[in-house]
Length: 577
Image 1: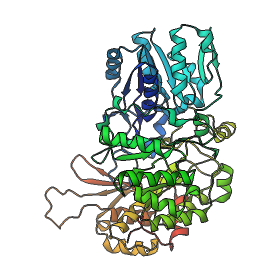
Image 2: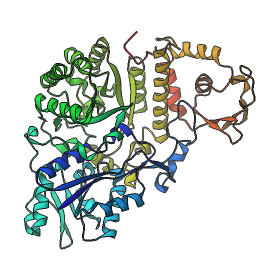
Image 3: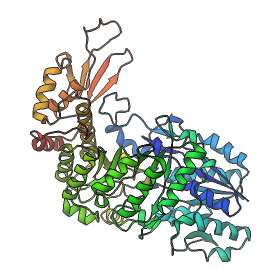
Image 4: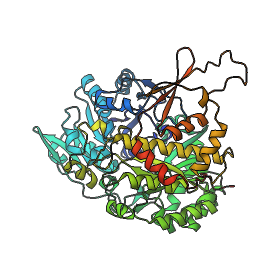
């Protein structure tokens, strides 16, 4: 029996290309191969990108995202189909000669893309068996099985359940399938879900991911091949907004440092990979184990020979100076920290560990280790206020860290999702349950407030970058910055106001002598932000002139921010002088 595992394409405003490697499918493929099955992986999330019309349920976002914006503060530049076209996927499915297709559905707003792949399979040959797994399936298996294109669903970890399901399918015995925990199916038209009962305890017993089934040249950071590596599973924290416990369980289970390094050595020797993204939710939960792993990496590969990252984020509650210094020696250059918010009561309600004082300590120790920091702040979560979110941005503005603004998205199965549902805060279409769709509005904030906070974080990070480059002095306040950019700005005097919503600047550079006509710069746009208390987009016209458009912005957010932050210092993002 041949199995084809598929990662569907996605449709969205953006794609984080370096995070698309289907490492979960590679783990699953290795397990299936160890059980004697012939396996292939079809990763449809290729580098191809095609502009497509924004769907009707997301049309309200046109007011927030000017797609042809060329401003350095822009958000998104269009809506796209990322990956293989449907026709190509259809041909690859036909050519695979597979008997069973396993489709990954990891994120609820992309569920329709997964269903479309299933539809293609069934319309080609309705006798083919379609199995779906992934985070979305674990969180909402019944809705998946309502699609007649899906025969079975697998909850949680698939390495054991999928091979067992295949054995029962081969025996053509539906009665025995009903005995498999963590599997859903239809029997006589009735949906049946067997609840999860266990998680894999001995992670070292699992084979290494079948990376040979992936086109490894597609996954690069810079020009170097990169791969994800999973060193532990399970999360004991129980944050109200996170679905990890639903998929991987509440108990922390870890691989041995020896097993992890063995996999890394295999990646180096066999695939010429020296760039590893540790994809765990709790890589540093057991600090002593993390220290042993980092020491073993240094012993095996040397100091700062590999390039390591943990882009999924690390809890600062499980870090200290010794571990951070070891991480630097092992190959980390940047540490991604899950900060969330400055409000301790809100963090307590969300079940998020760690205090602001603890974060300050870790941030200082990261700086001493010469590690760059990206601090994730969540925006737009039920229970938050504009004041609290602004305070969080101001706090991080004054730290040597980049701000990672993360707009909250509701995930089925989590306690916060149920609260949103009970309070009728959920948008009607699951496609709207994504960060880029600004999904939640409450009595405290609306979508315009959240997109303004998002843009504000981008502006702060841009200024930090200019301080890193030495173009602006570190530690200046917004008041001081305002005076500096007024002195620098030259374009403002040339701007003609045609109406209250549009600014137009003739700026045809084709025939202008050097030095006679200045291009619109970030200085000019930032000056407009400060003077008008609004954001502006920068757009090229057909005649190659440039127009500045005033975009919808929350005056409430910007007034509150500048009132509180006007005389607060801005620090650069990097620890090095």
